[in-house]
Length: 135
Image 1 (cartoon, rainbow, N blue to C red):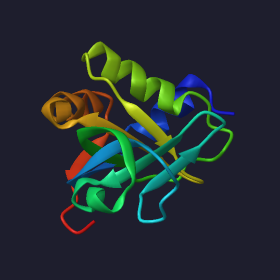
Image 2: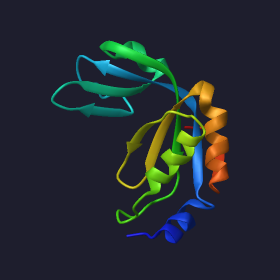
Image 3: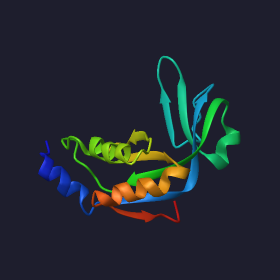
Image 4: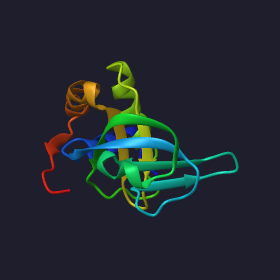
């Protein structure tokens, strides 16, 4: 379990990658494997999909214009508060997020019109933020 000082060490100098593609968050009729993320619970199916692939998804509702930021660092499962620290900095910058966690890293989606504010907030935490051209 990381204490606040250790958490700051994970964050400072850590790398965040901004994906060049735009994403959509959808409520879908069925799970579709042509997606970045599928979340299925007892009430609905949520898909995160690249906007250019949106026509392959059986959509009920869609929210377009999201940009993906991936935290390019492997965080041990015992690290507590990483995403909370990120979310707090973005909330203070008035940036809404859609958070996703993978096995060893985290991703956030921010609206494209808030991307510059999000990047600035992340850099203020000590993260190095870079555009990724080939994702």
